[in-house]
Length: 205
Image 1 (cartoon, rainbow, N blue to C red):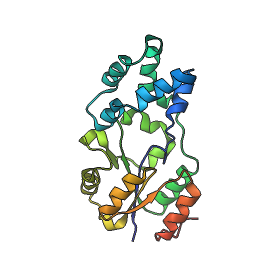
Image 2: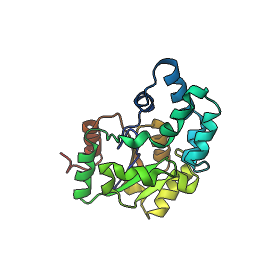
Image 3: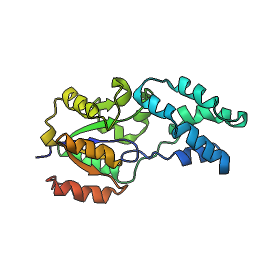
């Protein structure tokens, strides 16, 4: 029986859209693509999520790789992408309903150390309290099995009572291999509701 719902964050509970973040800074065309690639698509962002770089260190590394005309944007893209927080439609309602019915709600996310600063900007965050597994806190990244094992141990969870939801199929597959239920999120809260009902959470509308 499913008692606990474990959520990924980006593009599940909050919108993660690097192209949008770059457009907000006023860049288009080749400059926009270069910034998107060098800021969000390079190894520095992975190292931020692993907790081995700070925002300032990552920004400095990125500035060295981009033309001078683009360097002023780097700090904003690294540390200011959340200035206009966007939630995924329908997901706060679903999370609230799960909370009201007594489900355990947990956040399992690959994120940098600044997560504590920007996560409270998203209204859905109030349903999770401190039940958060941050990759940067433990130097572990999904889909490493050790990430999930650490979360299960930290929160004293029975894997047979958990479903993990992520937009990345590789992350869900890793959870399935460890004995959790798993669902891929396709940016469709109504579809997710139906999938959760099929797992036995039939109180969902």
